[in-house]
Amino acid sequence: ADSFDEECDYLFKAVMIGDSAVGKSNLLWRFAKDEFRLDSKPTIGVEFAYRNIRVGDKLIKAQIWDTAGQERFRAITSSYYRGALGALLVYDITRRSTFNNLQKWLQELRSLADSHMVIVLIGNKSDLGHMREVGEEEGRKLAEQEDLYFMETSALQNVNVEDAFLRMITQIHRINT
Ligand code: GDP
Ligand code: MG
Figure 1 (tube, helix red, strand yellow):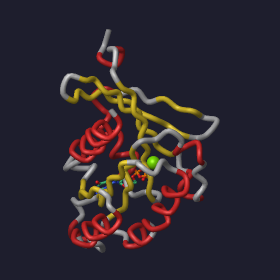
Figure 2 (tube, rainbow, N blue to C red):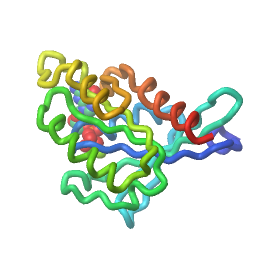
Figure 3 (cartoon, helix red, strand yellow):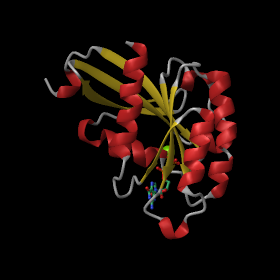
């Protein structure tokens, strides 16, 4: 059996959210690439990927959902969030509007998601420093105010991607087991 089929101790669901084209799908591909099984639920228009992670002596299977573009129309349904224990909330450091829209995403999370959800705020595209419109300190400050974890990442250059997902997954594990 390959590692995907190993017996896992826990299965966690988490979701990718944030404006269109901020890099959600690229972040997930990057994270899931090694043990990759993309699957989809065409009926509700989502895709998801799995990765197994060992935390201590436990094997966790993280099932991470990605939109198939519904965020463009602000048409993510409650089934997307149902049962999710974590979220990666992503903006693009080169587009101020994607940072300004975070409040809308947080409102949606607070109305549709579990109140104990672990949320990691991600400022993606850190490789495009010369086009930056949102300072790292602004991201960090918002995260502090809203009680979120925070990281800047580059899906393109594979900077901090693994760390961001692992931070979410280990924190979910701490809270829920
Ligand atoms: P989504 O709509 O949020 O899923 O965004 P995508 O993952 O489809 O990415 C949108 C665009 O941004 C694509 O052209 C990607 O190649 C680009 N992109 C994603 N992540 C990065 C990154 O870290 N750096 C750079 N320079 N481009 C990125
Ligand atoms: Mg996408």
